[in-house]
Image 1 (cartoon, rainbow, N blue to C red):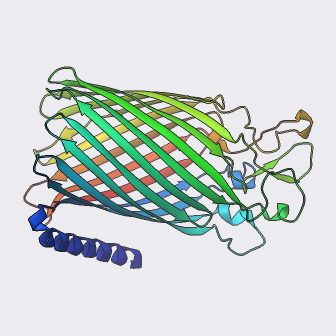
Image 2 (image 1 turned 135 degrees about the horizontal axis):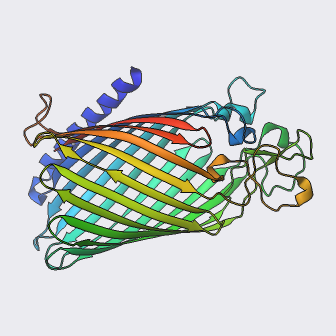
Image 3 (image 1 turned 180 degrees about the vertical axis):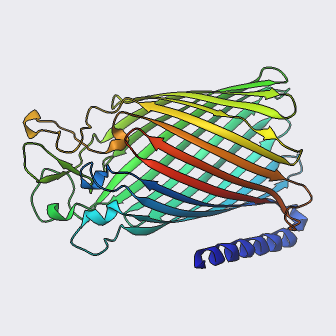
Amino acid sequence: MKKIVITVAALVMCLNVAKAQSDSTSNRKLKIDEVNFITSYYHQDGNNSAVTGGIGSEKLDDFGNSIDLQLSRFDKKNNKHTFGVELGIDVYSSASSDKIDPTTISSASSKDVRISPSLNYLKENAKNNTALGGGVSFSQEFDYTSIGANVLFAKATKDKNREFSAKASVFLDTWSVILPVELRNIETDFKYKQGDNAPRNSYNLALGLSQVVNQRLQVSILTDIGYQTGLLGTAYQRVYFGDNGNNAYSEKLPDNRFKLPVGLRANYFLGDKFILRSFYRFYTDSWSLTAHTAELEIPYKITPFVSVAPFYRFYSQSGVDYFKPYKEHLLSDNSEFYTSDYDLSKFTSHLFGLNFRMVSANGLMGVKKLNVVELRYSYYNRSTDLTSHLITLALKFK
């Protein structure tokens, strides 16, 4: 209850500040476009925790909130300038994180808060149908700090039926290395020691081309090329070898990774009530992992103001060569890299869900400025016996 009260109070404060900004800058035509508030609860369970070598509880709970404020103004050339400010706060608890140091009642990582503010800017030129923008972000939790930046460009044709977009981003992250308790005071061949700061840098280039084929069909082709370098494994995740008793090692993975996903999206309008939204993506990387994703969402308008959208996603991946389950690695194999993290194993997964949406320009539930309410639920099931539930509430004020 305390979390909910704090969340609502923060939203009210944000709205009051935004109104004051709008009133005080009316001579510069700065106005509030919208305020978005999202709250979510995530729960997962499984029995293949990487912290304990691929066995043990994967139970995790996460309560997340974010507030996004969008302000805009038009200049003398009728270019639109949009300024975005977002603050995200996540509170999570993890059963497996307690096992980093099982001698304690509760380890430092069993419960944590992640704070992630960001700033964004976008300039839209109506005359030549271009958009140019960028942003910065920051995120911090108990063992991880991330600083990010991005720039983006988009260009549409004169009739706006075709658009090309590009976005380059960089994340300069730092791990505070935490080793399993039994490895902290002994000599190992692991590159880092307990308490070291280890880098993890990510560079991405997202490209997109969308086309309106006709009045009913829209298609897009997308890619998000990525390269990572630094500590890409998780130091406190254990690996046990079948020919070495119960002695644990820290997970060891390559210090660079190239990623190449290519996706195709198609939206087809079936009259005034139905839309078919489909998506397919192929993924491959330098760790020899390949994956396929297929999604389908079917929004249906019950009334002009109320809609529901069932959705389904299928995912399949090959797994990396460095993965083996608990005690199936062998020291005699002389492997340079090894992990028992089932996120890198071969698996298939299914996600089912339903989205409920209400829209009104005149307000909803007695709140004049509340224009959109969305409630979304999804259930996830993986062939490694990992399951999860996610429920999200999104409110838009304009």
